[in-house]
Image 1 (spheres, rainbow, N blue to C red):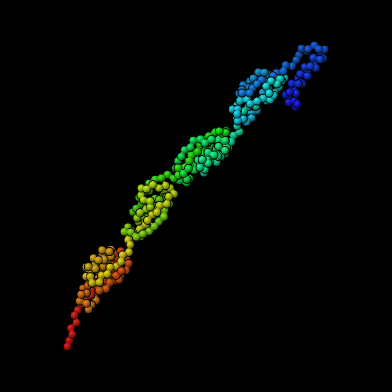
Image 2: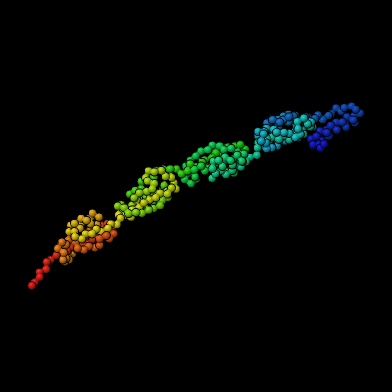
Length: 310
């Protein structure tokens, strides 16, 4: 059986004692080396173990050792083991628990809550407090913050807190109707909203916001796309047929459509007595699509009877 250094030391001390006794003709010598048994230090604190060894005139040599079963600062074992006899001032190595080996906190940001929990479990850690808050960039349910941060060493079983995104915070869309398009776009940009534009004819001035989709007061979130419908101005109108109307009748018909009549209506001869003083020509022609406010010129007929000489 292989003998440890401490066992060998104890054996040598015993042999010295026997040699001196034999040299004295069987009479014990008066000076002997008293061996000291190593006490049982397991379960003591580091300070208690050191004090006990010093009291017994032994030399404590403290060392640390990782342990998942013994709490930090408590003696796990000694070398030599308890009960071994040693000469005074002999060293005794006392192994004190340093707890389990630390583990690095994994990266949890960007993971779902369940993924974060599994990563912590795999690392020997546990999920601590879970809080939520709105975030314009991270989707709902994604970890956006952790404490401690990734890479920090923790003792196994320690908790790691996380913050999970609630998604973008919702708010009511302001009323943009009636605003000039540039002003509306500036307000949307300030709210971190995107937009698409559509244009259509309207009674509103050109460049004015007619409506939005979603509408004012509806809940939206940063990053949402808002459809902004912008006026192209009033739609074109068809020029009515003014033939046979008096000047006043033609003016009224044009004004009903947002058009104007030429102030100076030229006169041209006509052989139809029913068209005397009435519209016989117009420009633009009937049915032409024009913008509102366009002036339509008219020509009035002038009938005169011709005298036949026999």
